[in-house]
Image (cartoon, rainbow, N blue to C red; front, side, top):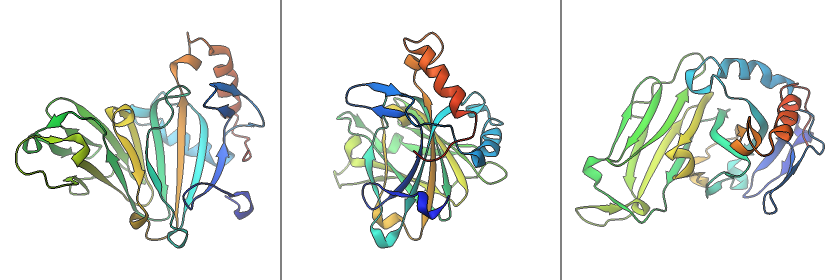
Length: 240
Protein backbone atom coordinates (compact mmCIF):
# COMPACT_ATOMS: atom_id res chain seq x y z
CA UNK A 1 0.00 0.00 0.00
CA UNK A 2 2.31 2.70 -1.29
CA UNK A 3 1.94 6.12 0.36
CA UNK A 4 1.66 7.81 -3.06
CA UNK A 5 -1.40 5.72 -3.94
CA UNK A 6 -3.60 7.17 -1.17
CA UNK A 7 -6.19 9.76 -2.14
CA UNK A 8 -8.15 12.06 0.21
CA UNK A 9 -11.60 10.77 1.11
CA UNK A 10 -14.33 12.11 3.38
CA UNK A 11 -14.27 12.75 7.13
CA UNK A 12 -10.50 12.83 7.48
CA UNK A 13 -9.88 9.51 5.75
CA UNK A 14 -7.65 8.50 2.84
CA UNK A 15 -8.48 5.73 0.38
CA UNK A 16 -7.26 3.33 -2.27
CA UNK A 17 -10.01 1.92 -4.47
CA UNK A 18 -9.88 -1.20 -6.66
CA UNK A 19 -13.21 -1.45 -8.42
CA UNK A 20 -15.41 -0.54 -11.40
CA UNK A 21 -16.59 2.96 -12.26
CA UNK A 22 -19.98 3.57 -10.61
CA UNK A 23 -22.62 6.30 -10.67
CA UNK A 24 -24.85 5.30 -7.77
CA UNK A 25 -27.40 8.07 -8.30
CA UNK A 26 -28.04 7.13 -11.95
CA UNK A 27 -27.52 3.38 -11.40
CA UNK A 28 -24.81 3.21 -14.06
CA UNK A 29 -21.86 0.85 -13.95
CA UNK A 30 -18.95 0.26 -16.32
CA UNK A 31 -15.49 -1.27 -16.22
CA UNK A 32 -13.65 2.04 -16.50
CA UNK A 33 -9.99 1.74 -15.46
CA UNK A 34 -10.65 -1.29 -13.25
CA UNK A 35 -7.86 -3.84 -13.64
CA UNK A 36 -8.68 -6.20 -10.78
CA UNK A 37 -8.09 -6.66 -7.08
CA UNK A 38 -4.47 -6.16 -5.94
CA UNK A 39 -2.14 -9.15 -6.10
CA UNK A 40 -1.54 -9.09 -2.33
CA UNK A 41 -5.22 -9.88 -1.69
CA UNK A 42 -5.21 -13.28 -3.39
CA UNK A 43 -3.83 -15.10 -0.35
CA UNK A 44 -6.31 -13.32 1.90
CA UNK A 45 -9.18 -14.32 -0.39
CA UNK A 46 -8.08 -17.97 -0.25
CA UNK A 47 -8.13 -17.83 3.55
CA UNK A 48 -11.54 -16.11 3.66
CA UNK A 49 -13.14 -18.86 1.60
CA UNK A 50 -12.10 -21.50 4.12
CA UNK A 51 -14.86 -20.26 6.44
CA UNK A 52 -18.46 -21.42 5.84
CA UNK A 53 -19.94 -17.90 5.82
CA UNK A 54 -17.54 -16.85 3.03
CA UNK A 55 -17.04 -20.08 1.09
CA UNK A 56 -18.67 -18.62 -2.05
CA UNK A 57 -17.73 -14.98 -1.45
CA UNK A 58 -16.40 -13.48 -4.70
CA UNK A 59 -15.76 -9.73 -4.39
CA UNK A 60 -15.47 -7.32 -7.29
CA UNK A 61 -14.31 -4.36 -5.23
CA UNK A 62 -11.71 -3.72 -2.57
CA UNK A 63 -11.57 -0.35 -0.84
CA UNK A 64 -8.68 0.39 1.52
CA UNK A 65 -9.33 3.21 3.98
CA UNK A 66 -6.76 4.89 6.18
CA UNK A 67 -7.84 6.41 9.51
CA UNK A 68 -5.60 8.77 11.51
CA UNK A 69 -6.57 10.29 14.87
CA UNK A 70 -4.71 13.54 14.12
CA UNK A 71 -6.96 14.01 11.06
CA UNK A 72 -10.16 13.35 13.01
CA UNK A 73 -10.86 10.30 10.85
CA UNK A 74 -14.32 8.75 11.20
CA UNK A 75 -17.19 7.41 9.15
CA UNK A 76 -20.82 8.34 9.83
CA UNK A 77 -23.39 5.57 10.41
CA UNK A 78 -24.52 4.41 6.97
CA UNK A 79 -25.79 1.58 4.79
CA UNK A 80 -23.65 0.39 1.91
CA UNK A 81 -25.44 0.59 -1.45
CA UNK A 82 -28.01 -2.17 -2.09
CA UNK A 83 -28.40 -1.78 -5.88
CA UNK A 84 -24.83 -2.79 -6.72
CA UNK A 85 -23.43 -4.54 -3.65
CA UNK A 86 -24.68 -7.90 -2.44
CA UNK A 87 -25.52 -9.65 0.80
CA UNK A 88 -22.16 -9.74 2.56
CA UNK A 89 -19.81 -6.92 3.50
CA UNK A 90 -16.39 -8.07 4.63
CA UNK A 91 -13.83 -5.84 6.34
CA UNK A 92 -10.33 -6.61 7.58
CA UNK A 93 -9.09 -4.41 10.43
CA UNK A 94 -5.34 -3.68 10.34
CA UNK A 95 -2.66 -1.86 12.38
CA UNK A 96 -4.80 -0.99 15.40
CA UNK A 97 -7.98 -2.01 17.20
CA UNK A 98 -11.19 -0.03 16.95
CA UNK A 99 -14.93 -0.21 17.67
CA UNK A 100 -17.56 -0.62 14.98
CA UNK A 101 -20.81 1.00 16.12
CA UNK A 102 -24.13 -0.37 14.89
CA UNK A 103 -27.36 1.64 15.06
CA UNK A 104 -30.92 1.22 13.80
CA UNK A 105 -33.34 3.98 12.77
CA UNK A 106 -36.45 1.84 13.20
CA UNK A 107 -39.28 3.35 15.23
CA UNK A 108 -40.22 -0.09 16.50
CA UNK A 109 -39.73 -0.86 20.17
CA UNK A 110 -37.86 -3.63 21.93
CA UNK A 111 -37.72 -4.80 25.51
CA UNK A 112 -34.08 -4.44 26.56
CA UNK A 113 -34.20 -7.15 29.18
CA UNK A 114 -34.95 -9.54 26.29
CA UNK A 115 -31.95 -8.23 24.38
CA UNK A 116 -28.55 -9.82 24.75
CA UNK A 117 -25.33 -10.50 22.93
CA UNK A 118 -24.74 -14.21 22.42
CA UNK A 119 -21.02 -14.70 21.69
CA UNK A 120 -19.10 -17.82 20.82
CA UNK A 121 -15.84 -18.60 19.08
CA UNK A 122 -17.12 -17.65 15.64
CA UNK A 123 -19.90 -15.10 15.87
CA UNK A 124 -21.83 -12.49 17.77
CA UNK A 125 -25.61 -12.55 17.53
CA UNK A 126 -27.77 -9.65 18.71
CA UNK A 127 -31.03 -11.23 19.87
CA UNK A 128 -33.98 -8.85 20.18
CA UNK A 129 -36.84 -11.30 20.52
CA UNK A 130 -38.15 -10.37 17.07
CA UNK A 131 -35.08 -10.89 14.90
CA UNK A 132 -31.38 -11.54 14.90
CA UNK A 133 -28.48 -9.58 13.47
CA UNK A 134 -25.35 -11.50 12.66
CA UNK A 135 -21.79 -10.25 12.96
CA UNK A 136 -19.13 -12.88 12.24
CA UNK A 137 -15.55 -12.37 13.40
CA UNK A 138 -12.33 -14.09 12.41
CA UNK A 139 -8.91 -13.52 13.95
CA UNK A 140 -5.40 -13.92 12.60
CA UNK A 141 -5.20 -17.72 12.70
CA UNK A 142 -8.40 -18.93 14.31
CA UNK A 143 -11.81 -17.36 14.91
CA UNK A 144 -11.58 -14.59 17.48
CA UNK A 145 -13.40 -15.30 20.73
CA UNK A 146 -15.49 -12.18 21.24
CA UNK A 147 -17.09 -12.90 24.63
CA UNK A 148 -17.03 -9.66 26.59
CA UNK A 149 -15.78 -7.67 23.60
CA UNK A 150 -19.18 -6.55 22.33
CA UNK A 151 -21.90 -4.68 24.13
CA UNK A 152 -25.42 -3.36 23.74
CA UNK A 153 -26.07 0.03 25.30
CA UNK A 154 -28.85 2.56 25.52
CA UNK A 155 -28.03 5.94 24.02
CA UNK A 156 -30.63 7.78 26.09
CA UNK A 157 -32.38 7.28 29.42
CA UNK A 158 -35.98 6.40 28.64
CA UNK A 159 -36.84 4.67 31.90
CA UNK A 160 -38.22 1.15 32.22
CA UNK A 161 -40.19 -0.79 29.66
CA UNK A 162 -39.87 -1.00 25.87
CA UNK A 163 -37.35 1.29 24.18
CA UNK A 164 -36.99 2.42 20.59
CA UNK A 165 -34.33 0.90 18.38
CA UNK A 166 -33.17 4.52 18.01
CA UNK A 167 -32.05 4.39 21.65
CA UNK A 168 -29.97 1.22 21.26
CA UNK A 169 -26.43 0.94 19.96
CA UNK A 170 -24.23 -2.14 19.49
CA UNK A 171 -20.50 -1.57 20.01
CA UNK A 172 -18.41 -4.27 18.31
CA UNK A 173 -14.80 -4.51 19.38
CA UNK A 174 -12.55 -5.21 16.38
CA UNK A 175 -9.04 -6.32 17.38
CA UNK A 176 -6.04 -5.68 15.18
CA UNK A 177 -5.82 -8.22 12.32
CA UNK A 178 -9.45 -9.35 12.67
CA UNK A 179 -12.15 -9.75 10.03
CA UNK A 180 -15.86 -9.02 10.25
CA UNK A 181 -18.65 -10.08 7.88
CA UNK A 182 -21.97 -8.21 8.06
CA UNK A 183 -25.05 -9.82 6.51
CA UNK A 184 -28.76 -10.29 7.09
CA UNK A 185 -30.22 -7.67 9.43
CA UNK A 186 -26.70 -6.39 10.16
CA UNK A 187 -26.44 -5.51 6.47
CA UNK A 188 -29.92 -4.22 5.69
CA UNK A 189 -31.47 -2.96 8.96
CA UNK A 190 -28.53 -1.73 11.02
CA UNK A 191 -26.21 1.10 10.02
CA UNK A 192 -22.50 0.80 10.74
CA UNK A 193 -20.00 3.55 11.50
CA UNK A 194 -16.85 4.44 13.45
CA UNK A 195 -16.61 7.43 15.79
CA UNK A 196 -13.58 9.72 15.98
CA UNK A 197 -12.95 8.82 19.61
CA UNK A 198 -12.60 5.15 18.62
CA UNK A 199 -9.58 5.83 16.38
CA UNK A 200 -6.64 5.76 18.79
CA UNK A 201 -3.80 5.32 16.28
CA UNK A 202 -3.33 4.79 12.55
CA UNK A 203 -5.79 2.21 11.21
CA UNK A 204 -6.14 0.55 7.81
CA UNK A 205 -9.41 -1.08 6.82
CA UNK A 206 -9.78 -3.25 3.70
CA UNK A 207 -13.44 -3.68 2.74
CA UNK A 208 -14.51 -6.24 0.14
CA UNK A 209 -17.88 -6.14 -1.63
CA UNK A 210 -19.66 -8.72 -3.77
CA UNK A 211 -22.21 -8.01 -6.52
CA UNK A 212 -25.96 -7.88 -5.96
CA UNK A 213 -28.43 -10.31 -7.57
CA UNK A 214 -28.91 -7.98 -10.55
CA UNK A 215 -25.30 -8.60 -11.61
CA UNK A 216 -25.11 -12.27 -10.61
CA UNK A 217 -26.21 -15.51 -12.27
CA UNK A 218 -29.72 -15.07 -13.71
CA UNK A 219 -29.73 -11.33 -13.08
CA UNK A 220 -30.59 -8.58 -15.54
CA UNK A 221 -26.95 -7.55 -15.91
CA UNK A 222 -25.35 -10.97 -15.49
CA UNK A 223 -22.92 -10.54 -18.40
CA UNK A 224 -21.49 -7.29 -17.04
CA UNK A 225 -21.21 -8.89 -13.63
CA UNK A 226 -19.28 -11.84 -15.05
CA UNK A 227 -16.92 -9.52 -16.91
CA UNK A 228 -16.21 -7.54 -13.73
CA UNK A 229 -15.70 -10.68 -11.68
CA UNK A 230 -13.22 -12.09 -14.21
CA UNK A 231 -11.25 -8.85 -14.05
CA UNK A 232 -11.40 -8.70 -10.25
CA UNK A 233 -10.10 -12.23 -9.75
CA UNK A 234 -7.15 -11.71 -12.09
CA UNK A 235 -5.48 -10.03 -9.06
CA UNK A 236 -3.54 -7.65 -11.28
CA UNK A 237 -5.15 -4.44 -10.08
CA UNK A 238 -3.82 -0.98 -9.40
CA UNK A 239 -5.79 1.74 -7.56
CA UNK A 240 -8.26 3.62 -9.75
